[in-house]
Image 1 (cartoon, helix red, strand yellow):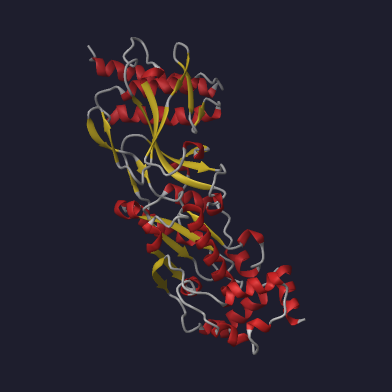
Image 2: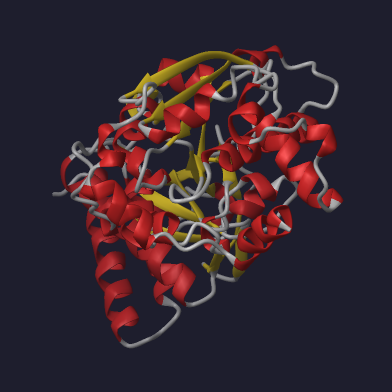
Length: 416
């Protein structure tokens, strides 16, 4: 005679098979059977072998069908019918994100990004997901419009109600989401078990889905799609030191994906640092890009720490690659009037120009070090200039660059 565990596994497999058949027929009640299969499998004394396979496949079906049939809203609602419609509670652990940021779920396995050298993760309890955040919230000016992040989904018993004969009760289970960057194991059936994690998937999603802007940023620096932007990979977190990554010539922030993949996967680094990127048009004027970064760094301080109470913001690290290193260098030096003397014979005070033009020029040519920056890392930065600029490649690049009407108008006003 089969033992109770075997009988429960057979029941879970039967529920999973029926859920698949209902889903093939376009029947939304498949969600209920995917839920039942996952719930039954979660009660079994072992989480390995056939049990793990049934649980994982049932969870995959629940998350997929739940969204397709409108039963699952990852922002806070899962509705199942298990002898009556009930709402399964959703819980969130370890995230800097709010539940309202969980706009849509997709499976981590959907993203490949072969340009990322190493896939970092591990098997365990739950299903690795990529969460798409598209909602607007305060501080959105420092977030990308579409920002994916990782989560591991787990359905687990939470108390009474799950031992009812012949089925399971939604009142006894919760759908939980864990931040895989912050949590690597959970308590499962009385023991500590590893959490299934795919730390690379959110970055792979960015690489797979984000249109690259390096060509436009180089040839059309005035295009609105490549305007300078300081962007946080996660919401601002008090106590974490910012690391600002500035890409190089003919590049964009996506170029940092490999490095971010390695850095974020280090738990000790993730607990201490938050990662930001700075996009700028590499075919534009470096002084203008540096001025934009300076303004946005101060704006971030005013937005998230107006009282200057977060000491971590005074330990900022800036990493600049190639041309980005020159942008970074101008955040940590004082210009005095040296730059202005290089382009003008008369003092700035005698300049006749519209107020907005004077203000822009002042921000570009006269600056002091940003006090928040504690350290700068230069990678392949041409501090003494680059011979390439004088060669054919540099001349061709200059011929390809087209400035916006605003920039051309500003220059015309100065000439006049």
